[in-house]
Length: 433
Ligand SMILES: Nc1nc2c(c(=O)[nH]1)N[C@H]1C(S)=C(S)[C@@H](COP(=O)(O)O)O[C@H]1N2
Ligand SMILES: [Mo]
Image (cartoon, rainbow, N blue to C red; front, side, top):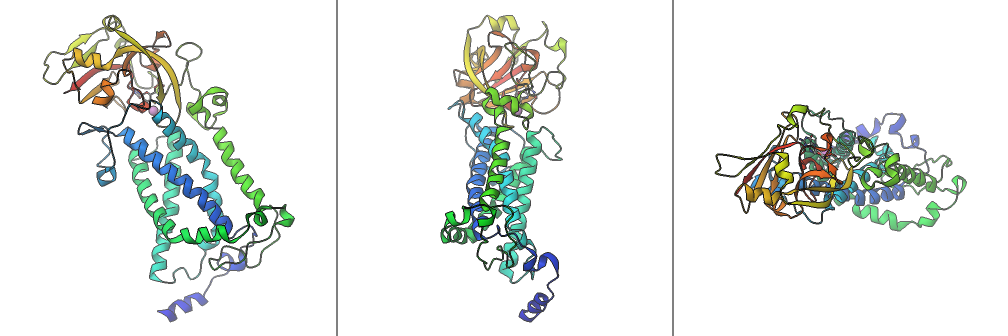
């Protein structure tokens, strides 16, 4: 076996498989470790906000699950009842997940660049343990590409997945994090040593002329025959950091609003509204796109309330709803894709509607809309979400009637609820005891 490996070793192909091929003086243990540390912190944050997002999307609802993602199984071990407080938690969580995800793209690319020589390591396999480690790197790099690409496609609203985005991104995340865990266990000590071993000031000081190569290392990252630097190490990190900052500036406006909304060019829902007026805030799916017909939302529209045993539903028209006790709340509307906005909603409390349907303490409610087909035509809300005093069946926004695109005649608004569960064009509420 040894002999065979030695023979293969002697057959080292030319070009990138030779260590002399890689000449950039910027590559080395310190650079790779520095980028690795940034990614360790960033990717951990992405994973945690991703898990929180999944819990919000698919909370435990008195024993029922919301979304039909085929059994999250043991990976859903941590799912809990999603709270209504703090009302901005989901908005903050999604904003961080999406903006940070974009900002890490240049760092991931720089990290890959810094370790390119290792992709051409020769011999390809040195021992069973090392083969296993290389296989885990395949999952690590493949998993990273998969997660970043599916995430970015999704925030660009290009739903091109054969399976649902949530399913793909959720399972992909666990595979990726498993590989990342192995990688960190194997490399953490080496990273700390590399970061401690050299003086940062020597590495980052001076322009290209003053930039010294990193010392050779047994990992084969630093060049054995370095070329003179054309860009300083500080310059390289500046380009990476600057690119990240640009991505943040071009996307964060969709979450925080203000003047940055105008330059949120990477975020399609940065500003897509129906023009000035009380309903001037982001629309996700328009009524036309969801096939809502004018006659469905005209005077003939009725809201149906059902309880567990009730055979005859309670039927209300919009006038009767407006005659009930109305409440006004300022609540964020936050989409899983990261955009959000805070508006002032007026409507009937969901708990009052539950009481009217004869259910004083509902365990959950099934909300159905006029939409006949397609995603999000219905959703489930937990008992805690129904019972929160701020949870509304909203009829008005900012003092005016809801516009058709924002869900007229009535829509759900619940604090800290993922936007996708704030169902528009509501037609029926079925409360479970
Ligand atoms: N019936 C129905 N309700 C829906 C949707 C939908 O497609 N159909 N989209 C949801 C999503 S994903 C979001 S983010 C919010 C957006 O509300 P807005 O368009 O008023 O901003 O509505 C939600 N309610
Ligand atoms: Mo959404």
